[in-house]
Amino acid sequence: MTNLLELYVKLGGLVLVGFILGRKLPVTVPTRLGLFLFWVGVPISIVSFLRQSSLSGQIWIAPAIAYLAILLGAFFAWLGIKGQAYFRKTVSQPSTQASLILAAMLGNTGYLGFPITLAMVGKEYFAWALFYDLLGTFPGTYALGVLLAASFGGSVQNHWQITRAILINPALWGFGFGLLFRQVTIPTVAEFWLEKFAWSSVALSLVLIGMRLALLKSWRSLPQVGISLGIKMLLVPLILGSILPLFGLTGAIAKIIVLQMAMPPAFATLVIAETFNLDRDLAVTALAAGAIVLLVTLPVWLWLF
Image (cartoon, rainbow, N blue to C red; front, top):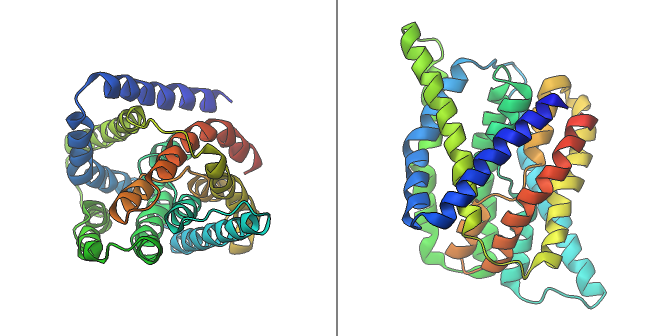
């Protein structure tokens, strides 16, 4: 309970600082901070934390479970849409249907998942969170997510932009370099400042989340969003979390996987919604509501697993 309270104070405090700054500072500030973290902060943090993480033989299961969680979330969301249609409460617009499915599929396993898993489980098994995000959520987002969005919303001319974003993603390059750099010996003082920079980037990522939340103003789609959040943050983690022992995943590793599965919808859902002309209001509402729901669900997952 102490660790959880400390986590809420740190995470909540940093997000609150970002929220206040987001209301006061020009809208260009979160954009520039996001670019800094994207190109510099996150890749260097990955390199640093990989040097301190344990890579076990089973770690490749993490992205496989991520894909399973994405597909299961999409399937349940599709069933929910069909169920609404059966009771004549259909979500008629394809753009809205796509946004609902995306919110149920894709979680914020990077900017939010990383600091939470680091705080609750520590650095030793952090590579599991990295593999889940960078080899699971990320390609799932820009492959399955984009495929879904393109089929519902169109905008074919943006496909090259998405492909380019995948190829030049600094986080993936940092991940590859970090794996190679793990065995390289560097001076103690360099190791010290590398770790300090990594933790500073984690803090700034939480501030950035607060800044972005400060710019979200729409809550009109909350009833529809409840379906996606229930699937993404409750149903999928409960089902897949209960079968993790079958894969030999228990203890701290199982906790990391469950926490990653239970993260709220990713900011990438909004990016995709804007790129492919989907329901932007619904995507915005899912982001804001998911961050609030996490405060309630997080202790549940820590207690269960």
